[in-house]
Length: 258
Image 1 (cartoon, rainbow, N blue to C red):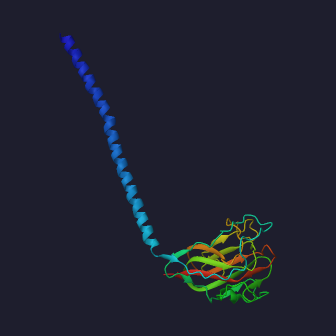
Image 2: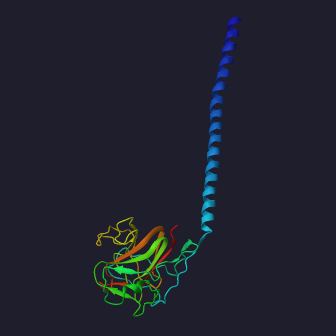
Image 3: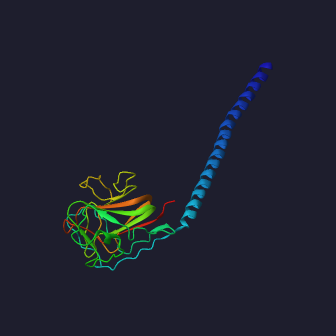
């Protein structure tokens, strides 16, 4: 009788032990689920917070005021032989570019210097005179090989976009187009490259990853992402029609640095 009772007690203990072992994973799982839910909620709250901040910032952005010159040719530009890494035409107007309210062209009328101080045609000051037309008398022609022009904004600005026209009387591609900003006129301090399509480092300023593009009346708009600088320098190294370098206008959209 006693032996049978002991057997029953052992069986009961084993059953209780088995039930206890089954409860442990269940409790652990419940705890993990609770922790996961909390983490997920935190992530959701964080994402909402970031979205709210982005929306708040976006409410202060407005399209910059770009006045385009008259188009000199219409339709799709002809194929340009021998130019690789060429971006495709948009096929329509360029979308608006948004920047903080109060952003304006801070390069208008500012002094310009260059590697070719005596241009073949025109004067360097024409690059910031506000005339963007492609007619004769509106562009500056610099000598062959690598040339650059530098604009002194007169003070530090937060720069959001740079818009440049080399020449848009005909479809051309200008080579080794490089745009940099810096804190000093010699481009030694805090130099930043905003655009570079020199894919073989023929300019000696590093290999660029940006694409070649065809000149049109819309110019080339470069996102400067709020870079703070006083000086803007632009390079080119001939074009698909000849070895000369041209500039019609350069606009720098920014706000005074605070």
